[in-house]
Length: 218
Image (cartoon, rainbow, N blue to C red):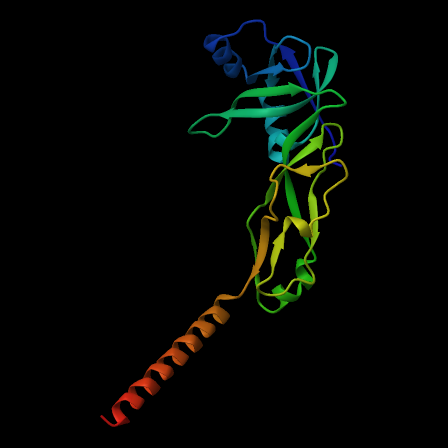
């Protein structure tokens, strides 16, 4: 399971665009906590502390222990608004979680044994179609990753969701089909060689047909 994050915040007394701009001028990022049986709570988070957590990765799919003026609650980040040019956070949305809550999250896929994968050793290339898969998970048991061993996959093989053992208590949000997660593609050199062979075969067949037509009696 994923390790929880810890983050601190302060209550934001004023709301509106002016208050949000003032907070950002003071190196604070405005946000809101909603959900559960409590009223929404407007907060500010320190910019530097938040940026460090964001750069560590998986911020949107990790349970967060958020402390607001001495009170700690468990939340998940549901939205991060960013500056259109600077690509830096400008606002955060957090959702409160109960111990029985189930939520949808995108969980990263990790491909093990790439160095000894049969297809890759033959020159194939691992092409990832879905680096993350959306799962319905228990809020208190969020998996850190989905893991798949690809050592026995050959060139041309497809890796689907059925090749991955889902963690207990989770299920995919896509139902009714064995969707593709990745595949082992043939190296470009092999593709070119196969295409040339195919073209040569077609040309030979065409020539043979032409010769038959020329030599056949009228």
